[in-house]
Image (tube, rainbow, N blue to C red; front, top):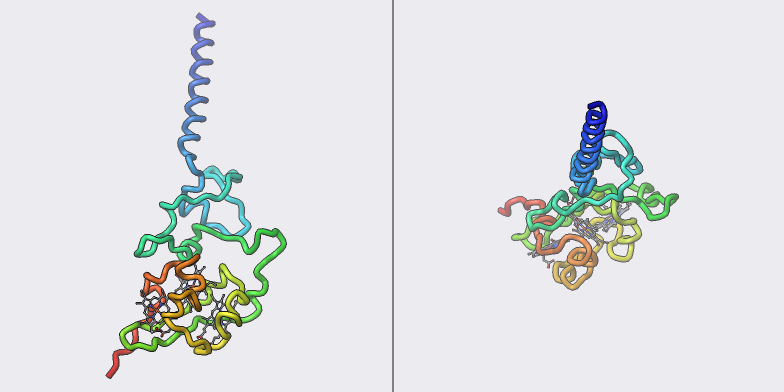
Amino acid sequence: MLRNLLRYSLLVVLLLYASAALGENQMDPAPADWPNFEYKREPGQFKRKRNGMIDPSPDVVSLKFLPKDNYGFVDWAKAIKDGVITPRDSIFEDKTAADNDAEAAPDVLIKSKLDFMPDVMFPHSAHSTWLKCSTCHPKIFRKKAGGTPITMAGIWKGQFCGKCHDRVAFPTRNCFKCHSVPREAKK
Ligand code: HEC
Ligand code: HEC
Ligand code: HEC
């Protein structure tokens, strides 16, 4: 009688333990797939599990949780803004993007040469998160609004914005992500 009771309670404990372990496994197919939770954190902060413990698993966010633009491409700028990803400044612990803080970089309105195209807003902030100032200045663009004669044909040939867009940044077929500022109606 007592032995049976012992045996059954042992079995129950084992079963409970197993189901808890299984449950945890099923809950964590990719621990990073919990948007709006662990990813809202400052650079350098630890990722944490739901119970508050530090989560040492690598940062992996599956595609379905990354924000998309209207063409279905990942909208990386929004992914950073929403806190879904927090890229490091450098793969070296001690390096920061210090050179990016030295000087203010205002957003630049690039007036369209043709009436039917909206003007282009160049957002510095969205770029300097990823790039050093010297990636673009002075070789690709002069550091002066209107200082570089940018053309769309040149962009499509891989110059100017086309050094990156269509290659490593969102493609140029998404016209209105760059041509985003409606022109005042012409008289
Ligand atoms: C990566 C940003 C970017 C994208 C994407 C982009 N453009 Fe442009 N485009 C520019 C810039 C910068 C200029 C130069 C300023 C101006 O004239 O508007 C320009 C200029 C133009 C011009 C003016 C004439 C010329 O050759 O310079 C036309 C027309 C134009 N783009 C059409 C388009 C169309 C159509 C698309 C989509 C298929 C597109 N652009 C996508 C950045 C972009
Ligand atoms: C992705 C390329 C890119 C990067 C990176 C970049 N810039 Fe620029 N910058 C531009 C473009 C494009 C213009 C406008 C050029 C034009 O209108 O001909 C510009 C213009 C400027 C201007 C002139 C603004 C004005 O109103 O005259 C300043 C100042 C400037 N950048 C500073 C910086 C600084 C500081 C950094 C680093 C934090 C930086 N830029 C990083 C592309 C870049
Ligand atoms: C040296 C590389 C490089 C150059 C040159 C460059 N870009 Fe970008 N751009 C990027 C990267 C990287 C991103 C972020 C990833 C993405 O959105 O695809 C980006 C993002 C953007 C965005 C999205 C910002 C947001 O908040 O959604 C716009 C708009 C843009 N670029 C316009 C331009 C225009 C206009 C030019 C030329 C005047 C230009 N870029 C030149 C690399 C570049």
